[in-house]
Length: 427
Image 1 (tube, rainbow, N blue to C red):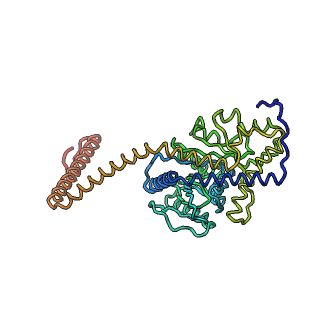
Image 2: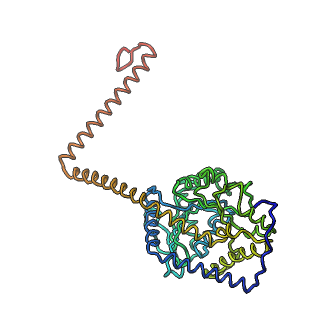
Image 3: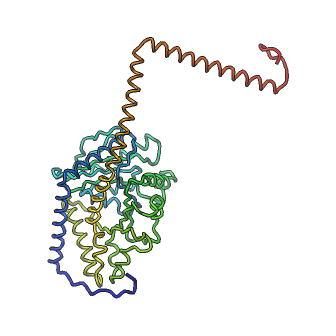
């Protein structure tokens, strides 16, 4: 809608009791969606299969085109808050994000029997998972210590090897997200000056594979024309075809909207993201106090409802709900991510199976070769012959080396002119 369009009629005022009923209805709808979505055995089995493939690929250095979501953004763009909202519980990930220099692969598993979060880390050198962590507050410490130990071991400031954490919970979706270190402009005290560039290069490499969806967060206070990191995203996904743009901290922007054309123009992001890219607009609770996981989830739903209420009641003419309604709120983003990842899982299944079959054939061939060599080593005659051939080859190489050294020495002496060299004669 153009800037000079006539605003629509003033939206009717909703009473507090109506607002509460709308919020309750929204929560009820979301609950029914969750129950129906996760009731499908195909969804659960497909997700578990891909999770096991991911864990094995990380442990053994395999590169499989598994559909994955990679979260990108600056350190202050709300990435950590979004991850906690998806998990359905808090574990002080903000403390980790400010200092972590490794990706974190979060494997969220919807388990109706897990009324409390069950979180386990994958062993650094295998595809086995360690014992569950008893306290959610200990997760941040575990991530930090694993990062420090690994970087010290490889003597580097950053590492692309992810930390894998599996979270089983009744209130989290079936979703896997690779959380990358936040973009920074300046290295922290004590870090190499190249750290910002190292992080940028690592994140771009993680985002480059075309089978990965990019979840790009930017806070609402930043204008698209002055975005620090949008060009970075376009460097790996020029048309934003596989990028999901999320405008975080959307509630900070709401007071700037007075007319319908203002909010519709902003929601459309026209001229910056292209016609085919529709961003999501998300606001999350700001309460940093000690609250229960249940209260945290209620706050998330309440913020979603309050954002919609504000756009309907406090903006003259409201907003274009038909066009932008499906892209507003955390609940909308969560449902989209789940459905999109499941769709990509289904589409990728044939190619993934073909690749696994090829890899199995290669491994079987390697095993046969190893068995043949092992059988040969059990035969003493074969071992003696192999040893003699090896010794003869070594002797030949040594002799060739000696001859080469002598020839080089002769050429050097010839440059100095003929003279008598003790032990050799006239040269």
